[in-house]
Amino acid sequence: MTTQEDNLFLDAKANANPSTEQKPSSKRPNATLICVVCGDGALGYNFDAISCESCKAFFRRNALRPPDRLKCRGTGNCEITVENRKRCKRCRLEKCFKMGMRKEWILTDEEKQKKRNQLVEKHRLKHSQAPTTVHRHRRRIPANSRTENSNSDDDSASPQRTTNTIEETSLMTEVDWSKIHRIQTAYIEAMEYNQVFGVPLYPATHSIHTTLELIRVPTYLSSLRLITYLKKTEEFHLLDIDDRVTLVKHNLLAAVFMHIVLIYNPVADTYHEHNTQDPVFQGKDWVEILGEDFYHDITATVTKIIRIVEYDRVVVKILLLILVYIKGFCAYDLPNEPSLNNMFVAYNVQNIYLETLYKYCLHQYGSTKTIHLFTNLIGAFFSIQRLSIHLKDLTHDVIDASQLSPLMQSVLQLPDTSASRS
Ligand SMILES: [Zn+2]
Ligand SMILES: [Zn+2]
Image (tube, rainbow, N blue to C red; front, side, top):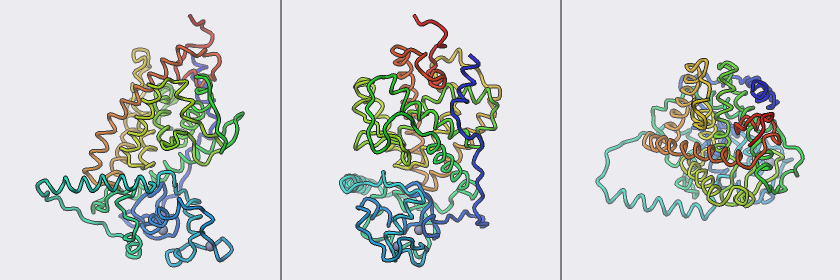
């Protein structure tokens, strides 16, 4: 038993040091965020990177277009600053990608139209009701960002901040932003860390035929990376080793399901971790292995969460951490689940993430939407709990534990390999 639990951590051959991030240089009391592309003032994350309103609009307009459409008249190495960011679109777009902006969740024209229709309908309903007296104040947007922000690309179709009414009293401090920055960095580094062996490399697709393979390849990869992710957060090291093992062993599978939100492409029904050499996994294989009902349950839950968080990847990355610290969440074998040596530490760590998430959402979405988001997420957490119990039951029925690595045996809580199966 102990060896199995020890292996849980040996298996993820990750650099256990939390990344040492330097604090942002700004000393002003209200966190001033700097666009990673051009250096202008920014209000928050857009497309997964801190960016100004101008670069956000630029990225939305250009990221989905064929890359060779834009030409650089220089040497392809133009410096991008607030003053000259409009001079070379090619280099600006390249810098956007280089600095981590993600195009996967930009709405296509068709999706935009759908969203527009929904907004028109919402507007109609709102105006058929009594007027409300809620007033919101705009936070100051950097002056040179406004013109581009109000151009033809309507912000109403933004997959990120769907409202411009950022509350004047943002609770986000410099410390909070650096916390989120550390989470972003930890996630990116963790996903890069464990590369897959013995399968074709991206962009090839890799077919999966059995439950065993499903656990051995994509589930295993996700588990390794999530453990690496946890180890790269400084909060994880506040817990003693036993408590870390208990929480990971019981909650990692649920985290794997939450992680699907970040790698699933609902349009193509495929799975791929961005910026890795992983092959693409196809939903149609999973349907055959897991059965239509279960697979539908998974994709319905995942798309529901994508809708709840409004395509904001930062939220999902914090949710992953929150989920791991819910003692007893697994609910699979609760009477036999060890209690934590120091419940208070786990509780505190979870509170840190919850508070950060809450403040972040208030900043990005305003209070009404944040309450809505949190309420819906509670339901989503229960769906995830149900899915992980279902997968455990399924694997217990069809998989011989000895064929799996110690990590996966532990995560699926399969009986010890030495014990004979009846
Ligand atoms: Zn910018
Ligand atoms: Zn250029």
